[in-house]
Amino acid sequence: MSLAENYQHIKNQLPKHVTLVAVSKNHPIEKIQEIYNLGQRIFGENKVQEMTEKQPNLPDDIQWHLIGHLQTNKVKYIAPFVALIQSVDSEKLLSEIDKQAAKNNRIIKVLLQVKIAEEDTKTGLEVSEAKELFLKYLQDEFPNVEIVGLMGMASFVDDKAQVAREFSFLKRLFDQLSIQKKLEILSMGMSDDFPLAIENGANSVRVGSAIFGQRIY
Ligand SMILES: *Cc1c(COP(=O)(O)O)cnc(C)c1O
Image (cartoon, rainbow, N blue to C red; front, side, top):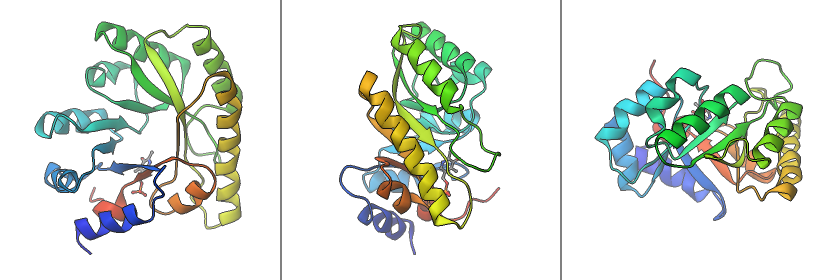
């Protein structure tokens, strides 16, 4: 299938309330431009260097989402333009984003990345850490960031029941925290598991290879 067919195929599977983040990591700007021309405006990258190289060479109205682990010393490179940092996994990182947002006279929107995979390999905040950090945020410790939601990655396993359990776990936390401050974005689901993520409450999905094809490293 062509890029356009892949893209339409994914779009057709998404209910209206679900936002698509097209994950363009390891793919060239020509392909991103092609998807842009079909109407897509939100693109996700997992590396700072790749994002900062692509951003000036593509249309200004693209909303860039950082979805990979972010080192504190690299926040400054994306702070001027990033639309959403989905992968906040420590207080130190949130502090640095707050500082760089202030320097750039803007509020930077972020998601807290929560560890939901029952297997132990994925990064993210423990639930207790996420709650603590959210509390500090509510007490105005990070005035230049806005926490707008949560992000999680399920285990890479075939056991659908397990994956569903992990997604619904994050949905419950999302609902819990939303009582204190209305959260907007629950980012769960990738090429292989986004329908299950949506069934379990995701309203934003991060799809790469199902649109762009396999990544070439
Ligand atoms: C690469 C990546 C995706 C997209 O993965 P696909 O399987 O290609 O859809 C989604 N989320 C994160 C955090 C990623 O790093």
